[in-house]
Image (cartoon, one colour):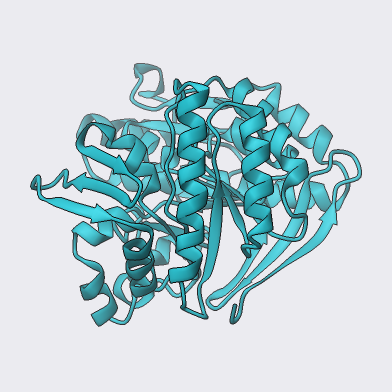
Length: 370
């Protein structure tokens, strides 16, 4: 793939955590990294300038949502997703596979693809591996994901195996349909909450030789220890010199635990969703800023945080904005939550380089971050 390369720079002696560097057509990504989610070509409440100021390296777009509105043809006409949304750093687009799970009540899954009913107007749309590749190539992200079937957490082994097999067949069809040389296509490991299936999926996809791999279908309702058990089962079978992306996972504890198990990339909407509800993330745990206890608290969300919000505004002011229903509250708290997560990964990278990631993670996890 043109302009795409992953370097494994260091493996922590203490813990096995990985420090890497991903080269893409739109710039470098230092890993492990957290990726802010821009579902509809925007990270909610944030401008591209804001994202650069907090040192975001890469953001996500959603294939399903951008297909429905404004349409991939319009985005392509605008010069691709980077130009359309004014972001000149790397972008990853998911495939719509998560919407197979999240919109299950209005979907019809079959071998050729998934018949979606639009959540906007009820119109019907068939997503196939081939059509998803057409959409993702038109959007033009640096990294595209294969179309997959994400089984629910309570799926039995028979269902999980069937969904996994379909994911593998769709991955092959995606490979055959994908032709854009400046875009890397990642396969996605599935298998529900069954370690044996996860290992089988990892082996199968590794043989298909994708430039990188997503791990999907986790953090969809199962207990966190179950997610960690499945990661531990499949990770030894993942190619060492290719990036590993744990999809849709990004709470502070899961970031730390995921890195501990060899994950390189994460994404999650938690940071901005929590902000819109008045919840801030800190290294001493959650802070619900709408609570009355902060009415006369004139300190920042988090002492020592270098974000614009913490450098200029108090918890009391943020509570006032929330109570007054001012949109600035969502912007400022999102700024902090995103910078908190990005800074957590910056510190994790340094700890890996210094062979102390195990103790770094253990000390933070004792604080009950989330």
